[in-house]
View (cartoon, rainbow, N blue to C red):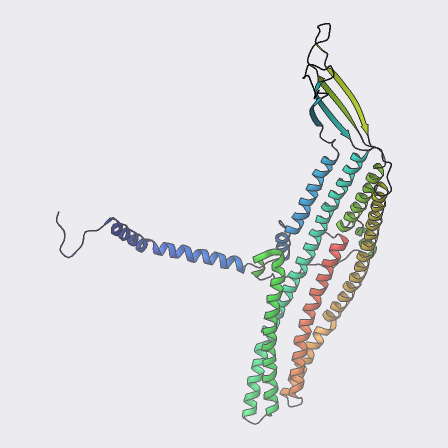
Length: 442
């Protein structure tokens, strides 16, 4: 076989590597394009603003806490079916009256091979009461899952609104920074020609540094608000929040919210808890009644009668009944415990209602106060703060004002705009709490 001088014959591995290298050289532009396209798609997804409605849907979809409560409700529902059934019958097989000194299975007339079936019946109507108890407990878990959903929705709204505020704060401060930077530059220029004092330069630079420090703090707050939101929506919290607040400007009357409170899932769960404890009292009372069981037995006998006939097999029937005589430390104490649990459940429900009513009253008053303050900001404070800052600047430019007044005026204007955004967010958060308590629709 002839070979080219200076080149070794290609082995199988070498041929494979050569083909692989040619393939990579031919296909790398396509692979690179696909990789860049995938990265661009992921970045585009991250850049899509996260609306409040979308955050709510993400939080409520397969929420683990709510799913756990629903699973518990399903388990208790299955227990309700089980508790109503009769106990499984028992089967007993044995040998009765077998002579041990002499003889065998056929020597004695009463020797039998027995097969006995027993069916027990719980006391009174305890099965029905147990079923109702488990059904009420299942309903309690179902309503608790509904309450959990409301709480998750409220927490998601509050977290989203907090993220919204810090994004708006970052935008407002970032928009104001060029003005403060220009003001510092102009002041330095005027100082260089002797028109202004060094104090003005230092003050302008100090306020610019403070503005940068505020931006750093706002970035930290943004990270914290995203982390809080991630508890409910996961990685989607990395997306920027949308720039529009929900239109939550109207509330029902206070008495309407109080009326809706009785339908709150937490309250209905407490109602179901009381019903479950009432059924538990019935179960304890039924234990004072006797339980009983019926035994049906079949006895096989071998051997023959003196007449030559085969001995007859035997059938037996008996009834066993409990005798609840010693009730002091069993039935009586079980009933006392059930009654105490019922009173505890009733007290817990009343405590819950009082707490929720107090929360509604407090939050409703807060929402009204925030609404009045926002109206004042809209009608007067925002305009006055802006006008004051402009007036201070004009006076300074005409040598009739102090530079400290200019800085104070624009800092007040910046703080006023931030306060206005905070008031809007706080009122929306207050609405989220009232929507939870009062059952307001999304």
